Length: 160
Image 1: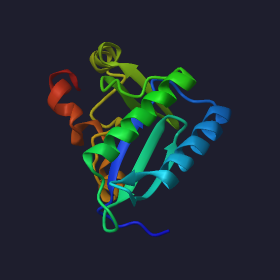
Image 2 (image 1 turned 60 degrees about the vertical axis):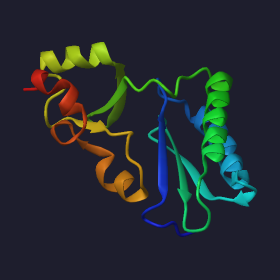
Image 3 (image 1 turned 135 degrees about the horizontal axis):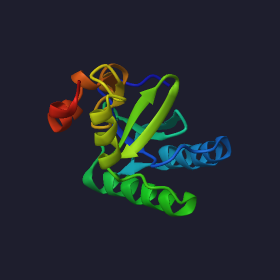
């Protein structure tokens, strides 16, 4: 199924790395949700995926039907159910993810700041911008060097 490059995207980051078994189970839930997701009784052209055993991503191609406030509320409620079922946190915006070699790690804001001060995280460290809003942004602006992300506005004075 082809999706428009302007499709809307929502990225939910787990506070911990998911096991392969959890990924498989959550992906089944996500796929079912995407297949049944509607807005004002119109089927949404939607898909869902998990990346790096950590990020749950919902995509809606609004060329067919737009995601309404009610349908977005449904997705938030669905994600809250996943949080409870799998004992994960998906809504902590200050749990920050970054790459260390081939691994994706995440830390609470305070610990992230400490690694910046120590120089473990630098202006070139790849961080994840979960604020991306379109499929194009997901592919081009989601995984970016710290210096090119929104993180620089918050922590710029700490980076070497």
